Length: 223
Length: 223
Image (cartoon, rainbow over all chains, first blue to last red; front, side, top):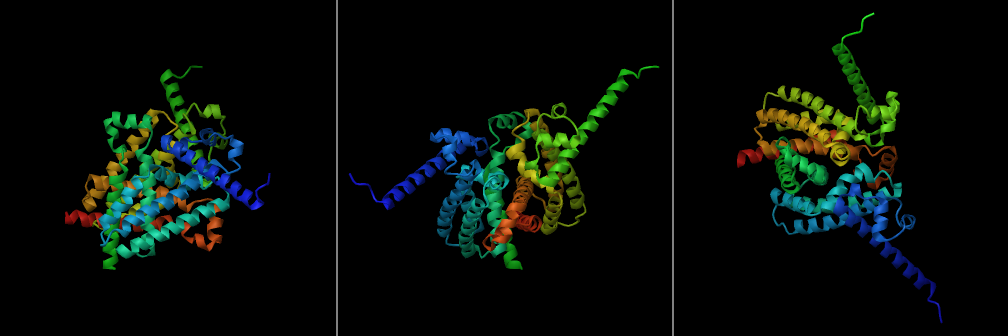
Protein backbone atom coordinates (compact mmCIF):
# COMPACT_ATOMS: atom_id res chain seq x y z
CA UNK A 1 0.00 0.00 0.00
CA UNK A 2 1.44 3.37 -1.01
CA UNK A 3 0.84 6.68 0.67
CA UNK A 4 -0.39 9.62 -1.42
CA UNK A 5 2.27 12.31 -1.91
CA UNK A 6 2.36 15.13 0.66
CA UNK A 7 1.16 17.72 -1.85
CA UNK A 8 -1.97 15.65 -2.46
CA UNK A 9 -2.61 15.43 1.29
CA UNK A 10 -2.26 19.19 1.62
CA UNK A 11 -4.69 19.69 -1.22
CA UNK A 12 -7.16 17.24 0.36
CA UNK A 13 -6.80 18.99 3.67
CA UNK A 14 -7.20 22.46 2.12
CA UNK A 15 -10.28 21.18 0.30
CA UNK A 16 -11.73 19.73 3.50
CA UNK A 17 -11.08 23.00 5.33
CA UNK A 18 -12.79 24.95 2.56
CA UNK A 19 -15.78 22.59 2.67
CA UNK A 20 -16.06 23.04 6.43
CA UNK A 21 -15.89 26.85 6.14
CA UNK A 22 -18.57 26.80 3.46
CA UNK A 23 -20.80 24.60 5.63
CA UNK A 24 -20.37 26.96 8.59
CA UNK A 25 -21.20 30.03 6.49
CA UNK A 26 -24.25 28.31 5.02
CA UNK A 27 -25.52 27.33 8.46
CA UNK A 28 -25.07 30.92 9.72
CA UNK A 29 -26.87 32.30 6.66
CA UNK A 30 -29.76 29.85 7.08
CA UNK A 31 -30.22 30.73 10.76
CA UNK A 32 -29.84 34.46 10.05
CA UNK A 33 -32.56 34.27 7.41
CA UNK A 34 -34.91 32.37 9.74
CA UNK A 35 -34.61 34.49 12.88
CA UNK A 36 -32.54 37.61 12.13
CA UNK A 37 -28.77 37.99 12.61
CA UNK A 38 -28.96 39.34 16.16
CA UNK A 39 -30.73 36.20 17.39
CA UNK A 40 -28.01 33.82 16.13
CA UNK A 41 -25.21 32.86 18.56
CA UNK A 42 -22.00 30.95 17.92
CA UNK A 43 -23.49 28.01 19.82
CA UNK A 44 -26.51 28.03 17.47
CA UNK A 45 -24.25 27.94 14.40
CA UNK A 46 -22.14 25.11 15.84
CA UNK A 47 -25.28 23.08 16.60
CA UNK A 48 -26.71 23.72 13.12
CA UNK A 49 -23.53 22.55 11.39
CA UNK A 50 -23.05 19.65 13.84
CA UNK A 51 -19.67 20.70 15.27
CA UNK A 52 -18.49 21.49 18.74
CA UNK A 53 -18.04 25.23 19.37
CA UNK A 54 -14.31 24.81 20.06
CA UNK A 55 -13.88 22.99 16.71
CA UNK A 56 -15.74 25.77 14.92
CA UNK A 57 -13.34 28.32 16.40
CA UNK A 58 -10.51 26.67 14.44
CA UNK A 59 -12.16 28.03 11.28
CA UNK A 60 -13.38 31.46 12.41
CA UNK A 61 -12.21 33.87 15.13
CA UNK A 62 -15.64 34.80 16.50
CA UNK A 63 -19.37 34.81 15.72
CA UNK A 64 -18.82 38.31 14.34
CA UNK A 65 -16.16 37.14 11.88
CA UNK A 66 -18.58 34.57 10.45
CA UNK A 67 -21.17 37.26 9.82
CA UNK A 68 -18.59 39.73 8.53
CA UNK A 69 -17.52 37.08 6.01
CA UNK A 70 -21.19 36.65 5.00
CA UNK A 71 -21.44 40.44 4.63
CA UNK A 72 -18.42 40.44 2.28
CA UNK A 73 -19.97 37.58 0.27
CA UNK A 74 -23.22 39.57 0.22
CA UNK A 75 -21.42 42.61 -1.24
CA UNK A 76 -19.81 40.56 -4.04
CA UNK A 77 -23.03 38.77 -4.92
CA UNK A 78 -25.26 41.89 -4.76
CA UNK A 79 -22.73 43.99 -6.71
CA UNK A 80 -22.55 41.41 -9.53
CA UNK A 81 -26.34 41.32 -9.89
CA UNK A 82 -26.73 45.10 -9.61
CA UNK A 83 -24.01 45.75 -12.21
CA UNK A 84 -25.58 43.24 -14.59
CA UNK A 85 -28.85 45.18 -14.31
CA UNK A 86 -27.08 48.54 -14.70
CA UNK A 87 -25.19 47.30 -17.79
CA UNK A 88 -28.57 46.47 -19.32
CA UNK A 89 -29.64 50.13 -18.91
CA UNK A 90 -28.85 51.87 -22.18
CA UNK A 91 -29.93 55.41 -21.26
CA UNK A 92 -29.26 57.77 -18.36
CA UNK A 93 -32.41 57.37 -16.30
CA UNK A 94 -32.38 58.15 -12.53
CA UNK A 95 -35.60 56.19 -11.96
CA UNK A 96 -34.19 53.09 -13.68
CA UNK A 97 -30.96 53.23 -11.68
CA UNK A 98 -32.90 53.75 -8.42
CA UNK A 99 -35.13 50.80 -9.31
CA UNK A 100 -32.10 48.57 -9.91
CA UNK A 101 -30.60 49.48 -6.51
CA UNK A 102 -33.90 49.18 -4.60
CA UNK A 103 -35.06 45.90 -6.13
CA UNK A 104 -31.71 44.10 -5.82
CA UNK A 105 -31.29 45.18 -2.18
CA UNK A 106 -34.89 44.42 -1.15
CA UNK A 107 -34.53 40.94 -2.68
CA UNK A 108 -31.66 40.23 -0.22
CA UNK A 109 -33.09 40.46 3.33
CA UNK A 110 -30.13 38.74 5.03
CA UNK A 111 -27.73 41.16 3.31
CA UNK A 112 -29.87 44.15 4.40
CA UNK A 113 -29.80 42.86 7.99
CA UNK A 114 -26.00 42.43 7.78
CA UNK A 115 -25.52 45.91 6.28
CA UNK A 116 -26.98 47.46 9.45
CA UNK A 117 -25.21 45.04 11.80
CA UNK A 118 -21.71 45.38 10.28
CA UNK A 119 -20.59 48.81 11.54
CA UNK A 120 -22.53 48.54 14.83
CA UNK A 121 -21.76 45.05 15.94
CA UNK A 122 -19.70 42.97 13.51
CA UNK A 123 -16.60 45.08 12.86
CA UNK A 124 -15.97 45.45 16.59
CA UNK A 125 -15.30 41.90 17.73
CA UNK A 126 -12.84 40.66 15.10
CA UNK A 127 -9.13 41.09 14.39
CA UNK A 128 -7.84 44.13 12.50
CA UNK A 129 -6.84 41.85 9.63
CA UNK A 130 -10.42 40.58 9.32
CA UNK A 131 -11.72 44.16 9.19
CA UNK A 132 -9.06 45.12 6.64
CA UNK A 133 -9.97 42.17 4.39
CA UNK A 134 -13.69 43.03 4.72
CA UNK A 135 -13.17 46.72 3.93
CA UNK A 136 -11.04 45.90 0.87
CA UNK A 137 -13.86 43.74 -0.51
CA UNK A 138 -16.52 46.43 0.02
CA UNK A 139 -14.35 49.25 -1.37
CA UNK A 140 -13.55 47.20 -4.48
CA UNK A 141 -17.27 46.54 -5.09
CA UNK A 142 -18.05 50.23 -4.46
CA UNK A 143 -15.54 51.12 -7.20
CA UNK A 144 -17.03 48.59 -9.62
CA UNK A 145 -20.60 49.80 -8.97
CA UNK A 146 -19.42 53.41 -9.17
CA UNK A 147 -17.96 52.83 -12.65
CA UNK A 148 -21.35 51.62 -13.95
CA UNK A 149 -23.21 54.51 -12.33
CA UNK A 150 -20.66 56.99 -13.72
CA UNK A 151 -21.16 55.59 -17.22
CA UNK A 152 -24.95 56.01 -16.92
CA UNK A 153 -25.35 59.27 -14.99
CA UNK A 154 -21.91 60.92 -14.96
CA UNK A 155 -21.79 61.18 -11.15
CA UNK A 156 -18.50 62.37 -9.66
CA UNK A 157 -16.64 60.45 -6.91
CA UNK A 158 -18.43 62.22 -4.03
CA UNK A 159 -21.87 61.71 -5.56
CA UNK A 160 -21.12 58.06 -6.29
CA UNK A 161 -20.05 57.44 -2.66
CA UNK A 162 -23.12 59.36 -1.43
CA UNK A 163 -25.38 57.21 -3.62
CA UNK A 164 -23.93 53.86 -2.54
CA UNK A 165 -23.82 54.81 1.14
CA UNK A 166 -27.44 56.03 0.96
CA UNK A 167 -28.56 52.84 -0.81
CA UNK A 168 -26.79 50.47 1.59
CA UNK A 169 -27.29 52.61 4.72
CA UNK A 170 -31.03 53.01 4.10
CA UNK A 171 -31.45 49.37 3.03
CA UNK A 172 -30.03 48.41 6.44
CA UNK A 173 -31.98 51.01 8.42
CA UNK A 174 -35.30 50.40 6.63
CA UNK A 175 -34.93 46.63 6.87
CA UNK A 176 -34.45 46.90 10.64
CA UNK A 177 -37.56 49.11 10.92
CA UNK A 178 -39.52 46.76 8.63
CA UNK A 179 -38.51 43.65 10.60
CA UNK A 180 -39.25 44.37 14.24
CA UNK A 181 -40.16 40.75 14.98
CA UNK A 182 -43.64 39.29 15.51
CA UNK A 183 -44.18 40.86 18.97
CA UNK A 184 -43.65 44.46 17.81
CA UNK A 185 -45.34 43.86 14.47
CA UNK A 186 -48.50 42.86 16.37
CA UNK A 187 -48.23 46.03 18.43
CA UNK A 188 -47.84 48.26 15.36
CA UNK A 189 -50.79 46.71 13.54
CA UNK A 190 -53.07 46.61 16.62
CA UNK A 191 -52.63 50.27 17.64
CA UNK A 192 -53.88 52.56 14.86
CA UNK A 193 -51.78 55.45 16.21
CA UNK A 194 -48.64 53.46 15.30
CA UNK A 195 -49.46 52.95 11.61
CA UNK A 196 -46.43 54.92 10.43
CA UNK A 197 -44.14 52.60 12.38
CA UNK A 198 -44.78 49.99 9.66
CA UNK A 199 -42.25 50.38 6.87
CA UNK A 200 -41.96 48.74 3.44
CA UNK A 201 -38.35 48.57 2.30
CA UNK A 202 -38.54 48.48 -1.50
CA UNK A 203 -40.98 51.31 -2.36
CA UNK A 204 -39.47 53.67 0.18
CA UNK A 205 -35.90 52.91 -0.91
CA UNK A 206 -36.90 53.37 -4.57
CA UNK A 207 -38.54 56.76 -3.86
CA UNK A 208 -35.58 57.98 -1.78
CA UNK A 209 -32.96 56.95 -4.35
CA UNK A 210 -35.00 58.34 -7.26
CA UNK A 211 -35.30 61.73 -5.54
CA UNK A 212 -31.58 61.64 -4.65
CA UNK A 213 -30.54 60.85 -8.24
CA UNK A 214 -32.90 63.37 -9.83
CA UNK A 215 -31.58 66.02 -7.42
CA UNK A 216 -27.96 65.01 -8.00
CA UNK A 217 -28.37 65.08 -11.78
CA UNK A 218 -30.08 68.46 -11.56
CA UNK A 219 -27.24 69.83 -9.46
CA UNK A 220 -24.78 68.20 -11.86
CA UNK A 221 -26.15 70.08 -14.85
CA UNK A 222 -26.74 73.36 -13.03
CA UNK A 223 -23.35 73.83 -11.36
CA UNK B 1 -44.12 67.07 66.51
CA UNK B 2 -46.67 66.69 63.68
CA UNK B 3 -46.42 64.40 60.68
CA UNK B 4 -46.76 65.91 57.19
CA UNK B 5 -50.06 64.98 55.47
CA UNK B 6 -50.03 61.87 53.26
CA UNK B 7 -50.44 63.88 50.04
CA UNK B 8 -47.28 65.83 50.87
CA UNK B 9 -45.38 62.58 51.45
CA UNK B 10 -46.57 61.22 48.12
CA UNK B 11 -45.44 64.40 46.38
CA UNK B 12 -42.07 64.22 48.11
CA UNK B 13 -41.75 60.60 47.11
CA UNK B 14 -42.79 61.28 43.49
CA UNK B 15 -40.25 64.11 43.40
CA UNK B 16 -37.51 61.88 44.77
CA UNK B 17 -38.37 59.19 42.24
CA UNK B 18 -38.21 61.74 39.42
CA UNK B 19 -34.85 63.00 40.65
CA UNK B 20 -33.48 59.46 40.74
CA UNK B 21 -34.71 58.75 37.20
CA UNK B 22 -33.14 61.95 35.96
CA UNK B 23 -29.83 61.06 37.62
CA UNK B 24 -29.88 57.60 36.01
CA UNK B 25 -30.61 59.02 32.55
CA UNK B 26 -27.86 61.62 32.93
CA UNK B 27 -25.34 58.99 33.98
CA UNK B 28 -26.28 56.81 30.98
CA UNK B 29 -25.99 59.78 28.62
CA UNK B 30 -22.59 60.76 30.03
CA UNK B 31 -21.21 57.22 29.64
CA UNK B 32 -22.76 56.87 26.17
CA UNK B 33 -21.09 60.10 25.05
CA UNK B 34 -17.70 59.01 26.44
CA UNK B 35 -17.50 55.48 25.06
CA UNK B 36 -20.44 54.86 22.68
CA UNK B 37 -23.81 53.33 23.62
CA UNK B 38 -22.84 49.74 22.84
CA UNK B 39 -20.02 49.83 25.41
CA UNK B 40 -22.28 50.88 28.31
CA UNK B 41 -23.78 48.12 30.48
CA UNK B 42 -26.42 48.35 33.21
CA UNK B 43 -23.66 47.69 35.77
CA UNK B 44 -21.69 50.67 34.41
CA UNK B 45 -24.72 52.95 34.74
CA UNK B 46 -25.43 51.76 38.30
CA UNK B 47 -21.79 52.38 39.29
CA UNK B 48 -21.80 55.85 37.68
CA UNK B 49 -24.94 56.91 39.55
CA UNK B 50 -23.82 55.24 42.79
CA UNK B 51 -26.69 52.74 43.12
CA UNK B 52 -26.85 49.00 43.30
CA UNK B 53 -28.02 47.36 40.06
CA UNK B 54 -31.08 45.84 41.76
CA UNK B 55 -32.09 49.30 43.08
CA UNK B 56 -31.70 50.78 39.60
CA UNK B 57 -34.08 48.14 38.22
CA UNK B 58 -36.86 49.62 40.39
CA UNK B 59 -36.74 52.67 38.08
CA UNK B 60 -36.15 51.10 34.66
CA UNK B 61 -36.97 47.67 33.21
CA UNK B 62 -33.65 47.05 31.44
CA UNK B 63 -30.51 48.76 30.12
CA UNK B 64 -32.37 49.04 26.81
CA UNK B 65 -35.29 50.92 28.38
CA UNK B 66 -32.89 53.52 29.77
CA UNK B 67 -31.43 54.12 26.32
CA UNK B 68 -34.84 54.05 24.65
CA UNK B 69 -35.95 56.78 27.08
CA UNK B 70 -32.82 58.78 26.12
CA UNK B 71 -33.70 58.27 22.45
CA UNK B 72 -37.22 59.66 23.07
CA UNK B 73 -35.70 62.65 24.91
CA UNK B 74 -33.29 63.05 21.99
CA UNK B 75 -36.20 63.19 19.50
CA UNK B 76 -38.02 65.88 21.51
CA UNK B 77 -34.91 68.00 21.99
CA UNK B 78 -33.65 67.65 18.38
CA UNK B 79 -37.12 68.29 16.94
CA UNK B 80 -37.53 71.51 18.96
CA UNK B 81 -34.17 72.86 17.76
CA UNK B 82 -34.73 71.78 14.14
CA UNK B 83 -38.21 73.33 14.02
CA UNK B 84 -36.89 76.58 15.47
CA UNK B 85 -34.34 76.68 12.65
CA UNK B 86 -36.95 75.77 10.03
CA UNK B 87 -39.34 78.46 11.32
CA UNK B 88 -36.55 80.98 10.77
CA UNK B 89 -36.40 79.96 7.05
CA UNK B 90 -38.63 82.37 5.19
CA UNK B 91 -38.29 80.91 1.68
CA UNK B 92 -38.57 77.46 0.13
CA UNK B 93 -34.95 76.45 -0.19
CA UNK B 94 -33.96 72.74 -0.31
CA UNK B 95 -30.33 73.53 0.56
CA UNK B 96 -31.35 75.54 3.64
CA UNK B 97 -33.69 72.79 4.88
CA UNK B 98 -31.00 70.13 4.26
CA UNK B 99 -28.48 72.27 6.15
CA UNK B 100 -30.86 72.58 9.14
CA UNK B 101 -31.36 68.79 9.30
CA UNK B 102 -27.65 67.95 8.82
CA UNK B 103 -26.24 70.49 11.25
CA UNK B 104 -28.72 69.79 14.07
CA UNK B 105 -28.19 66.01 13.76
CA UNK B 106 -24.39 66.17 13.47
CA UNK B 107 -24.31 68.37 16.59
CA UNK B 108 -25.93 65.50 18.57
CA UNK B 109 -23.54 62.51 18.45
CA UNK B 110 -25.22 60.57 21.28
CA UNK B 111 -28.60 60.94 19.53
CA UNK B 112 -27.08 59.75 16.22
CA UNK B 113 -25.64 56.71 18.01
CA UNK B 114 -29.05 56.01 19.61
CA UNK B 115 -30.89 56.42 16.28
CA UNK B 116 -28.94 53.47 14.86
CA UNK B 117 -29.16 51.41 18.05
CA UNK B 118 -32.92 51.83 18.63
CA UNK B 119 -34.42 49.51 16.00
CA UNK B 120 -31.52 47.02 16.11
CA UNK B 121 -30.96 46.64 19.81
CA UNK B 122 -33.07 48.88 22.04
CA UNK B 123 -36.66 48.16 20.98
CA UNK B 124 -36.11 44.43 21.41
CA UNK B 125 -35.41 44.06 25.11
CA UNK B 126 -38.18 46.18 26.66
CA UNK B 127 -41.90 45.77 27.36
CA UNK B 128 -44.47 46.45 24.64
CA UNK B 129 -45.72 49.43 26.66
CA UNK B 130 -42.23 50.96 26.62
CA UNK B 131 -42.03 50.54 22.84
CA UNK B 132 -45.53 51.99 22.42
CA UNK B 133 -44.66 55.06 24.51
CA UNK B 134 -41.39 55.51 22.56
CA UNK B 135 -43.09 55.20 19.16
CA UNK B 136 -45.79 57.70 20.14
CA UNK B 137 -43.11 60.25 21.03
CA UNK B 138 -41.23 59.79 17.75
CA UNK B 139 -44.39 59.82 15.58
CA UNK B 140 -45.59 63.03 17.27
CA UNK B 141 -42.23 64.72 16.58
CA UNK B 142 -42.29 63.43 12.99
CA UNK B 143 -45.69 65.12 12.54
CA UNK B 144 -44.46 68.37 14.04
CA UNK B 145 -41.32 68.41 11.87
CA UNK B 146 -43.40 67.40 8.84
CA UNK B 147 -45.70 70.41 9.31
CA UNK B 148 -42.73 72.81 9.14
CA UNK B 149 -41.27 71.07 6.09
CA UNK B 150 -44.68 71.08 4.39
CA UNK B 151 -44.99 74.83 4.98
CA UNK B 152 -41.56 75.44 3.41
CA UNK B 153 -41.43 72.94 0.53
CA UNK B 154 -44.98 71.61 0.12
CA UNK B 155 -43.93 67.95 0.50
CA UNK B 156 -46.75 65.41 0.70
CA UNK B 157 -47.05 62.84 3.52
CA UNK B 158 -44.96 60.17 1.74
CA UNK B 159 -42.20 62.62 0.85
CA UNK B 160 -42.15 64.00 4.39
CA UNK B 161 -41.79 60.50 5.88
CA UNK B 162 -39.10 59.67 3.29
CA UNK B 163 -37.18 62.84 4.23
CA UNK B 164 -37.29 62.28 7.98
CA UNK B 165 -36.43 58.58 7.71
CA UNK B 166 -33.51 59.39 5.38
CA UNK B 167 -32.24 62.12 7.70
CA UNK B 168 -32.46 60.01 10.87
CA UNK B 169 -31.55 56.69 9.20
CA UNK B 170 -28.45 58.13 7.53
CA UNK B 171 -27.46 60.15 10.62
CA UNK B 172 -27.40 56.84 12.51
CA UNK B 173 -25.66 54.86 9.76
CA UNK B 174 -23.05 57.54 8.98
CA UNK B 175 -22.33 58.15 12.65
CA UNK B 176 -21.62 54.45 13.15
CA UNK B 177 -19.27 54.45 10.13
CA UNK B 178 -17.62 57.67 11.32
CA UNK B 179 -17.08 56.35 14.86
CA UNK B 180 -15.42 52.96 14.52
CA UNK B 181 -13.41 53.41 17.72
CA UNK B 182 -9.67 54.20 18.02
CA UNK B 183 -8.47 50.72 16.93
CA UNK B 184 -10.28 50.77 13.55
CA UNK B 185 -9.66 54.48 13.04
CA UNK B 186 -5.92 53.78 13.27
CA UNK B 187 -6.32 50.99 10.71
CA UNK B 188 -8.24 53.22 8.27
CA UNK B 189 -5.74 56.06 8.48
CA UNK B 190 -2.66 53.81 8.31
CA UNK B 191 -3.69 51.83 5.20
CA UNK B 192 -4.03 54.20 2.22
CA UNK B 193 -6.27 51.68 0.41
CA UNK B 194 -8.89 52.19 3.15
CA UNK B 195 -9.22 55.97 2.79
CA UNK B 196 -12.87 55.80 1.75
CA UNK B 197 -13.73 53.96 4.95
CA UNK B 198 -13.33 57.30 6.77
CA UNK B 199 -16.64 59.14 6.79
CA UNK B 200 -17.60 62.68 7.87
CA UNK B 201 -21.21 62.83 9.02
CA UNK B 202 -22.24 66.45 8.43
CA UNK B 203 -21.04 67.19 4.87
CA UNK B 204 -22.21 63.83 3.56
CA UNK B 205 -25.61 64.11 5.26
CA UNK B 206 -26.00 67.67 3.92
CA UNK B 207 -25.18 66.60 0.34
CA UNK B 208 -27.52 63.58 0.49
CA UNK B 209 -30.46 65.56 1.90
CA UNK B 210 -29.92 68.47 -0.51
CA UNK B 211 -29.98 66.10 -3.50
CA UNK B 212 -33.03 64.31 -2.07
CA UNK B 213 -34.94 67.59 -1.55
CA UNK B 214 -33.97 69.08 -4.93
CA UNK B 215 -35.09 65.84 -6.60
CA UNK B 216 -38.31 65.69 -4.58
CA UNK B 217 -39.17 69.31 -5.36
CA UNK B 218 -38.44 68.71 -9.05
CA UNK B 219 -40.73 65.69 -9.08
CA UNK B 220 -43.32 67.67 -7.11
CA UNK B 221 -43.53 70.37 -9.77
CA UNK B 222 -43.30 68.03 -12.76
CA UNK B 223 -46.01 65.50 -11.83
